[in-house]
Image (tube, rainbow, N blue to C red; front, side):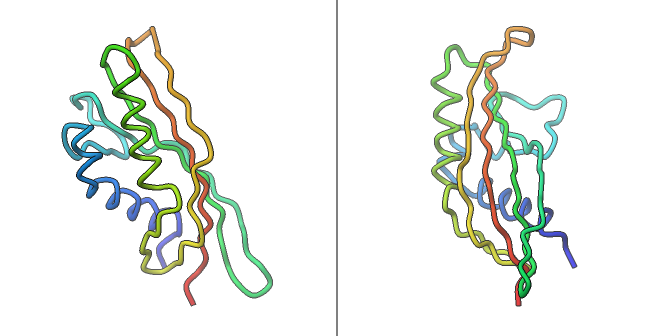
Length: 136
C-alpha cells in the first residue's frame, strides 16, 4: 500500500504542474521535490511534510501539514506574491483524486514572503493542512 503522504504529494505535483496559469507564472512546469542545481528562477519546491494519526475507532486517517516554497530573483515581491496567490487559489479546498486514500479536506494555513539578502532571492512559503482517510 502506498503511504498517504507519498500518494498525496504525487497528486499535488500533478495538479500544480498541470495548471497553465501557474506554469505561465513560473515560465514552465518548474515544480520540484528538490530543485536541480541549474534550475532557472522562478520555481517552486516541496518542503517539510509532517503527518499525524487522525484515526477514529472506525476509520483510519492522517492529518498532514506540508509546505511549498517559491523562489524568485525578480526585483520586488510582485512576482513571488503572484505565484504564491496562484498556488493558494489552486490548492485551497481543492478536490484531489487519490487512488488508495480519500482527501477529506485541504486548507491553506499560512504564508510568508521575504527577501533573503545573503543569496539575493525572494523566498515564499505556503503551508497547508490536509486530512486524508484510508479508502474503504
